[in-house]
Image (tube, rainbow, N blue to C red; front, side):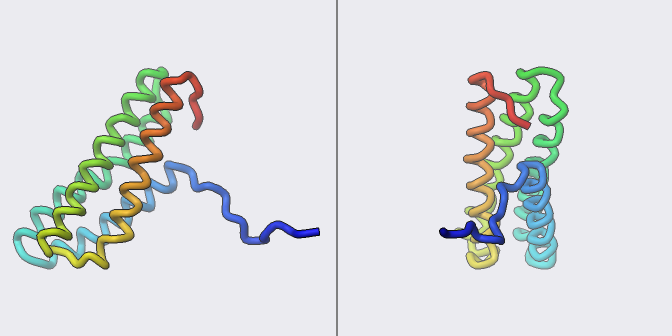
Length: 129
């Protein structure tokens, strides 16, 4: 009889995950802020979009209606996609090292997919919180 692994990890709550992502973006911004003017400017763009994802997810949780819930998550998705753009630009322009960006970029892409699925599920009438 096989036993399940003891350290089985439950899926992380989207609010926790976007909060942790915001912290990662803030840490990355601190490094970019110490660099060239280009790093500071692009870093500010990244900071705005990257931290906005979690803020909009939090607002969605308190949505006054299904439409409000979907709208706030749609804004979070747009911000996640914008964040992916800034991260790719930082890497392609060599303002930041690819190794420094890879984990944050991967998480931004995953969050985009998750938020898209949340929106589709909510539109189909199954609202999960």
